[in-house]
Length: 208
Image 1 (cartoon, rainbow, N blue to C red):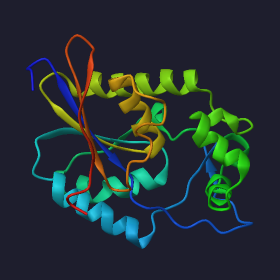
Image 2 (spheres, rainbow, N blue to C red; image 1 turned 120 degrees about the horizontal axis):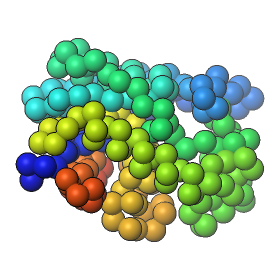
Image 3 (tube, rainbow, N blue to C red; image 1 turned 90 degrees about the vertical axis):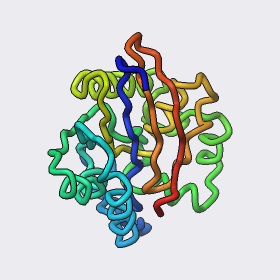
């Protein structure tokens, strides 16, 4: 890695609690906020085992509990205090928050299929527009880089939609080309001193 670059190790949070039809998850900042499931807790432990020996200078999460819970074993192993970055919260799904999106996808809802076909979240009523997502995610990554500094490595436990958007910006890909990172997976981004983003790896699950 060039000496003026910063590496950001992006971890998708572990699997969260299953959705129950008719019962919505509580919302935080307008997003569903389920806890980790037992499977997710096991994935968090595996992430910690994989990353604890890396030269991490900083650890970041979002205000949603599934990222903090995923980061907790790594924080315990490294003595790093996680800092929350609101700009890296999951994509806002408008009227389909709290688990509704999962239910509609599982049921084959035609509008949910349009989200995938058209590769934009704002097909959903009230959901976040692509330009808004792009701007805040870039701001979130820039905040990590500024806090971590050149020549250092940070870990950030974030969300699948956010990882997909980061990879899209790094590679100029289709909007949803990288949107399906697995729970507990590791994706590596290098931010060069001149501001360019390089995608080093995507969806590494060798530790799971």
